[in-house]
Amino acid sequence: MAKFDDQIVISHLQNKWGSQHPCTMCGKGPWNVHESTYQLTEYNEGNLVIGGPVIPVIPVICGNCGYTVLVNAILAGVVKHSTSPDKEVLK
Image (cartoon, rainbow, N blue to C red; front, side, top):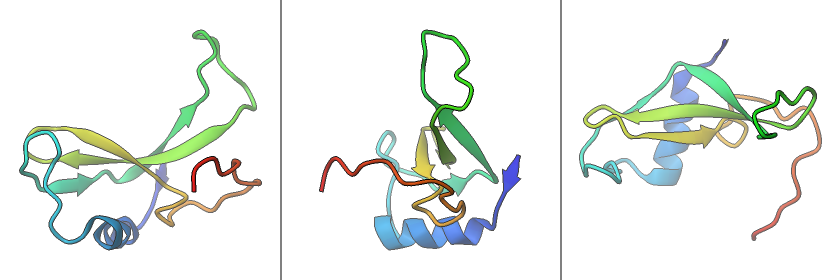
């Protein structure tokens, strides 16, 4: 598992979300940054895709209700992008 300095993610979220950002499900919190990165892979009808695209994500979990959001680890600054980025679709 890829570990990282959670303060990098916390600073990123405070910059993007602001210092007070209640949970969208329960209206409370607090938010907790999970200590590991995970990856999303392309779905292929349940078959393992080898060598396909991967999106590294960090779970951010509401400490009250458990609602979980996934934050892109590249944009949060904890994982370096090693290949050319995906095409920008929306501006």
